[in-house]
Image 1 (cartoon, one colour):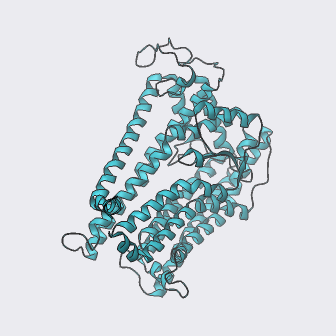
Image 2 (cartoon, rainbow, N blue to C red):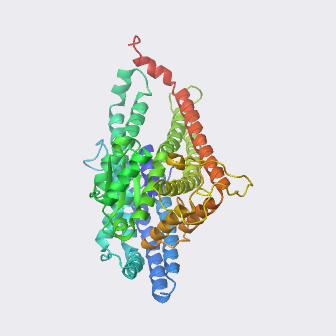
Image 3 (spheres, helix red, strand yellow):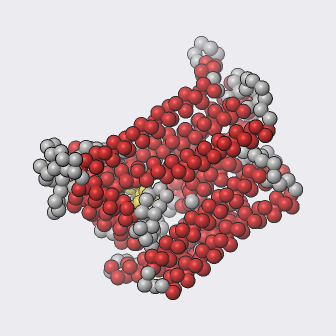
Amino acid sequence: MFLIVIGILSIILAFQRPLYDGLHAPRLVISAVAIATMLPALIAWMVNRRVVWLLERKPETPGDGQFALGRGLTIVQAVLGVSHAALLLGTDWMLLCGQLPMVGAWPVVPGLLATLPFLLALSLVWIVTYPADRAVRQIALEVNIFRGKPVRPVWTVGQHLLFNLRHQVLFILIPMFLILAARDVITIYSKRIVDWAGHERVPDLLLGATAGLVAVIAPVILRWVWVTQDLPGGPLRDRLELMCKQLRLRCRAILVWRSGGVIVNAAVMGLIGPLRYILITDAMLEQMEDRKIEAVFGHEAGHVKRHHILFFLLFALISGCLVTVLTARTSPGRAGPPIDRAMFQIIATIGGVVLLLKWGLLFGWISRRFERQADVFGARTLALSGVPCSLPCALHAPSEIDSAGTQAKETFVGRALLGRRAPLCSTAANIFSDALHDVAVLNGIPPESRSWRHSSIASRSRFLQKLAGDPGATRRFERLVSRIQWGIFLGAVLSALWAAWEIRLWTVLGRFWPGNA
């Protein structure tokens, strides 16, 4: 869902008028708004009925209902994204929002109004699918009772709606609207900025710098969007802080992520140590053993130590640079013959398809490899923390021969256990796999259910077990991820140089260089 939210907000950020000539009459535009708002909710209602029927008629196989819910929500999200993208790009809805009385040139307000149908449609989807979500979470509650773990009532429809708005919309909406506000203010004063700076590209550079600043400070904002508090003192906190020292992992705080006891998850956010937070949900603290929580914590630490957040930002930078090149090549002030609107629409459509494929396919493929690398790192942290090895193990029995026929001769101790060449401890891999399975069961997710960004829990567990039994496969996988990261880095550098060439960045910097004032 977060990618759809980003996509819709990006359209509002990139375009202040529709790209295509579609609906212009206000009545037709309002009708299109109503259809885009109600159609996803109608499909979600049908999905909800199907899921509830499966769970009631086939209680012995709850996985069928859980799978139907996941697949149905994927369809709903696709309809939601396509319908609202068509509304923004093919009707005068954004123009109407700017022409309403008392709106005019006010920063942010037109963009906020333009998002209201999307936000309303999302809210309706969550409301009509609440019975199915409640039924799935009821199964997880019964599992907790059977395990003798603390239980809480399944959340109400209001709590369900508020949680989703906070965690699937607001954590993206607030940073994006800060950028939108900067865009609107820069647009209003663009002539003055250009006159002062002496270069027409300075407003674009200011907007890019603002987006970079928002990306850095966003974690401080988001810790208050999500309900959090510092992890209380105790043995678990002491072990997690010791792990941070062993890993040389800097973070501002370890936080309890308040979910009402219904979400078993963890997360990390923040590019730099002073503004980085690691979050663990209240349900994970209540339902899972400390050793497994340490395993999940190690997974989140892996995202930081393997620099996944940085590479995701570089991946996004490539998109920004491509948009900059497209803008420079199609702007009225460019050299060469003018580009008519039809040609601009064709170029923008091709660029949009490229970005859609980049984020819809390539990003998911990369993200799944990064998640598996974080799993490997999480298992490595368990070995570093001294988990007793009780299984045949390539790490603790280095004389064994791997599948490539190579005899391992290296001994890994201390921080070397975290190295990309080090084998995995079989016991640590088993503990981490059990932790993944617990996360799936406690969240009501079928272990075999595939995820676009994370793969299925079962496949991740099998992959980890495979690596634990084959040190050669571990090294090959780590090399693959290294090549991916180098590819992202080189792509970011080349696209940044291309964008700099298109906007003649050196002429902009020359305006502010000492001695050129």
